[in-house]
Length: 274
Image: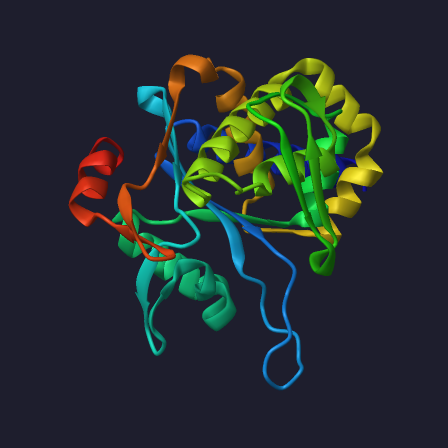
């Protein structure tokens, strides 16, 4: 029995190692989705939440390249059966499958895996790693009592808690609205990735493994397997994010309340990663 147990453990670890090595050598695209609170439909039932944040992470390990493409939530797209609509409504109408289909159409690249978080998991992850240092670019004060939202941040460099970080990435009271907000989200994701790379952060997360498990079970959805997560962690750990990570917002122009994408410019922007 002891031998069989040791053999099973060995085979499991070997499978993890092989999976991790594959990720470290293979082009990999991950769709990162942040969803808001679900609304009531016309029948008074909860509908699927909208995607408040959409990020396409393209990882090219052999070239040492990593790109984060923001897809503005108000991007106008033809949703099958619903006509021209904001892309953030795709998840309401068809869940992740429809969202993935439309993102792949826009990016002309496959989505290999996805990671979906809601507001609670986002806050939990930030608090789990001990907060994230960000330079807040201006005074941010906004309140929406009906949504239970209060954003109150002073300008300057500071360590944001989970609640503060959520306000930072949701704030959109700017001249360019969501377009400016996508830049803040890119800055935050870069800072968060840098924090996760720190050895002290890994130790902190391991000490709070019960909290990490609760967050992943209650609020986080992904089809990433453990060997893939291990491979991604090891790959990111070896990268200089300041030099390797490129961030972009999909080009387009305002058309009323919508963001009308420019397919030709998107094709040029993503060419190096296809």
